[in-house]
Image (cartoon, rainbow, N blue to C red):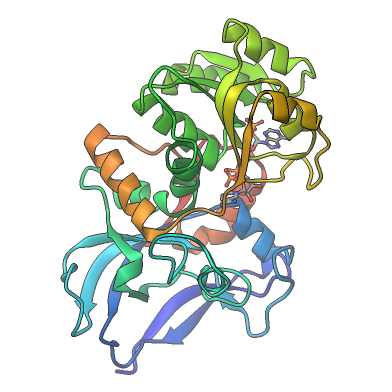
Length: 342
Ligand SMILES: NC(=O)c1ccc[n+]([C@@H]2O[C@H](COP(=O)([O-])OP(=O)(O)OC[C@H]3O[C@@H](n4cnc5c(N)ncnc54)[C@H](OP(=O)(O)O)[C@@H]3O)[C@@H](O)[C@H]2O)c1
């Protein structure tokens, strides 16, 4: 087989260096692998870091970009049992984190960065064990958003946040992870408070996602506003994508026994907060690095059961991948930015 596959590669030297190129199609499928026709790829903040050289520096040779895809199974290896040609699937961000704890081997299989090829290619070979059936009610574009954004929000709210009906969940900003966090929390019967720096986004989030409680994180006093909304109690779960001073303030907005999922550092890498508050309120802080394939499957089935519809802000064709990256960088979006290969 000498077919060539079109793909987008990054050398880590800037978004404008993202380049369309061709790779040879894999000759033979290994026993436990699956060949997928990629239909949609969603972008994450990490893809901007990779393209700009802020996630492992520059790459020579360039790597295939992006980490999240949905597609249709074209062929399966001889030992694959759970999938067949025609099935629609989404990928786990790690090729070999099936379940349980992360370790130093599994972490190196995170696709789309640190020298590991990603998924922005017409056809992709992936281990069957790292693929999950796409929720039946979702379009390919929607399905592609579950891999990182959906899974990380799921990890923070459900897997580790263990949110209970009636509890309060705080999400920061209107990006991919946070909007998923809000949607998952609502479906789990929790009440959501969202922070944003944009009045226009606040209005849209209220209208389109039915989130009633919104505060502006640029106002230093927002933790008091959050406590007031919760009748003085504070929130039970935090989807912390900002770190820095925002994390310090999130702690002030917490209830007793709160669970904070530390996900991102959009505010700052370092954070200074009063340990006394963490101790007396018995707050759990846990770093999140997405989750395993098992948890991705749990998320997919949860979405199916609750007919959860991911929030796509804008769709770009494959040929306009650079525009898609620049749109994500502009932070004009609410939810996800997706590239279609169909
Ligand atoms: N650890 C993990 O497993 C994991 C997984 C996914 C993402 N992440 C990290 O999580 C972060 C968010 O990722 P994403 O893909 O959801 O990004 P995204 O879609 O680009 O969302 C960015 C949004 O965050 C909000 N924001 C920016 N600075 C903020 C601040 N100082 N305080 C509060 N909110 C702020 C803004 O919302 P407004 O415009 O509404 O103000 C912005 O639109 C990134 O740092 C990313 O690297 C980590």
